[in-house]
Image: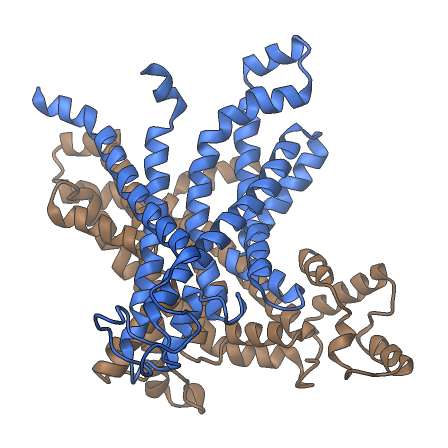
Length: 300
Length: 283
C-alpha cells in the first residue's frame, strides 16, 4: 500500500518511459493502456494488490524481461553479501564491544570506543574505495570488483570477489553494532543480578558468561534486525563500488531508467525480506529471553 | 575521596571537550566554505597543472584527471556539504516538527495514522527514500538532492517530536495553561517548543552529519548535484575511476567528509551534555 502511494507520487506518467519523444496521441493512449495508467486510481490499486498477491511483478519496461526471475538472480549476489557481512560484523563487534565495556578504564577499551566513533562517521563507499586501494591496487590480493559470469558455478572465484565488499559492509556495520553491544554490556555490568552472582562466589567471567550474555543479548537483538535490514537495503552503494550485479544495482539502474516495474518489484521483495528479518529478530529475542515468551502466552 | 570528586566532574569536563572539538571541526569547515565564496587557491574549473599530479606544495591534494586542483574542489565541497546539510535539516525540521506537533495534538485516530506513517517511513533507510525522491524529480540538482534528504529525514524528526511533545503535553503545567484559557498556539510556542528544543537540537546535529554522508552517497551514485558542483561524493567517485594510476585522489575528499561528520557528531554529544535543561536549571 505504501509502495503504491510512493510510486504513484512520482510525477510523470509511467507510460512516458515506453514511448519515444514526439509520439502521437494514439501511441500515447496505447502505451497508457499497456501499463494500465489510463484506468482510475482505485482500479490500478486493486490490480496492483492482486498481482502482488500472486507474486506477479510484471515485466520490465526497458528489457521486456519478467521482473521476478531477474530479482532472484540478483538476490543470489545480494543475500550472501549481506548475510556474510552481518556474520563477520557480529564476530568483530560482539567481543570488542564487551571488551571495551569491561576494560573501559584501560587504553584499549577507550581506543575501541574512539575507533567506533570514527566508524560511524565514515561513508560506506569510502571504506570500499580505501580497501580497493589497499588490497586490490597495492597488494593485488583481491579483485577490485565484478562478479564471475558463471556466478556461484565458480564458488571460489565468487567468494574471492565478494571478500572486499563483505569486509567493507562488516567494518561499517560493526562500528555501530559495537556501540550497542558496549552499552548493553555496561547495563549488565551495573546490574544487581551480576553483583549477586559474584557475591555467591562466581568468578567475574563466569558470572558474565552465565548471566550477562543472555540478558545483554535481548536489547542487542532488536538492533541486529534493524542493522541487517539496513545492510540489505544499503547494499546499493557497496554494489556500485564493487560493480556487483546485485539487487541494489538493479534498483539504481531502474531508478535511472524510470523502469517502474523493476523499482516496484525490488522494493516489494526487499520490504518482504525486511519484514521477515524483523520477524526472525523477534523470534530470536523470545528464544533468548523466556520472560518474553511467558508474557505472550499470558496475553493470548 | 578525590576519586569521588573526579567521577562527579568527569562527565562535564568530557562534555565540554567533545563540544569544543566538535565546534572547532565544524567551524573550520564553515570558515573554509565562507572563504571559497571570495577566494580559492586556483580556479576550480580551470586547469592549473598536469593531469593526476600527486600531492605537492603547489597542489596540496594533487590534481584530478582534467588537471584541476583537488584541494580547491575539496574546499568548495565543504560549501556544498554545508549547504545540503543545513538545507536538508531545515526542511526536515519544518516538516517534521510541524507534523510531530500536529500528531501530538491530534485526535487519537489521526495520531495513530500519522505515527504509523512515521514508523513505516523510518523503516526505509534515509538514502533509499532520498533516491526515490530524486527519481521523482526530472533532473538531479543541488536543490533536488537537498529536498530529497530533507523529506527523507523529516520522518525521523517527526517521530521524535511526537514522542517528546506527548510527554510534555501530559504534564501538569500544560493542563494548568489550558485551564487558564491559553490558546493552542500559545501552548505550542510558549510551553511546548522551548521545552523540547534542546533534545531536537541534538537530533538536528546528528541528522546533519547523516545528511552529509547521504549527500555524498547520492553524488557518488550519480544522483546528486551535477558536475560543476564539486561534491565530495562525486570527487570520490571520480577518484575511484583512476584509483590504479592515482590512488591519492581517494584520500583527501574522504578525510574532509569524515572530519565534518565527526565534528557534527561530537557537537551533538556535547550539546546533549551541556544543553540538558534540568541540569542547567540547577546551576
